[in-house]
Image (cartoon, rainbow, N blue to C red; front, side):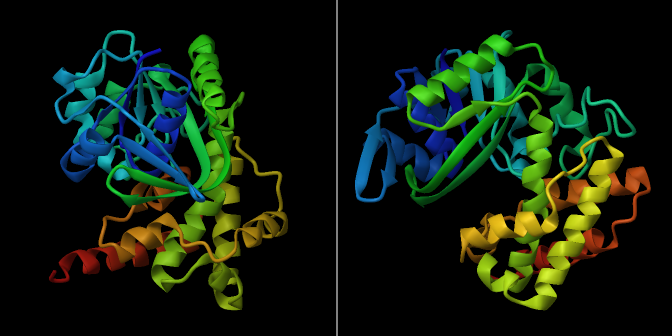
Length: 326
């Protein structure tokens, strides 16, 4: 299985390292400082006091890279639509796409059935271009449970490694799913094939859709937010609204909010990805993490005033940050 990685950030670097460690031919499409670092030093994965290097063929031109059996997309959700011309050039007739994004992916409602079947969420896939180019039948969906960050271009620091989940939303690619998960396991990544990847996406989003945007508004880590009764009340209200949306589309959440909070508190003073992006002056991943949920609720005529209100506040915050000089 020949693999090309687009999005060699924290999650993409972690997965690329695992696949390379397993002996698969892995190449990367990159640019700027990341491309220079890959050509000079290779991909570097650090864990504790240990460091590994992986020599990956890398280019900013898809024509320089070998044809891939699997395209691993690890870009942030809002970076996917503008990257679509590059993505098209990386696809061969039989190339499958493995995803690793936060939030609702563009393929989530394709072939799902129910009251939102085929709905295009503009906050996730403007105009539906991703869904047309990369339909669910060509996708292996992924959910990453990992704590990692980019220390420098081409250098990934792995802090906590829980598991990487992959599933086949169309049910057409059992063999490819088994090969991908098997290769990741061989390379030391705790990967699992799951029967219902949409349910896993939804369950992760049940936590991300509140902690990420609230952390940006509060500029606070998770422990600080959960220790504040007022913020905790907002977290719980957002979780109740999302659970109600899930019930409407056939994805009820069996776990109670109290049970989920026990797990979340164990994470401690973690700074969410949205807070890290805000502090670094990067664009916030608001559409896939919260905007798509608000759209879905509106389509279903399901009341979600807290989700909508927090979405509006964070959107205005992001717009204000973008206008700040420097």
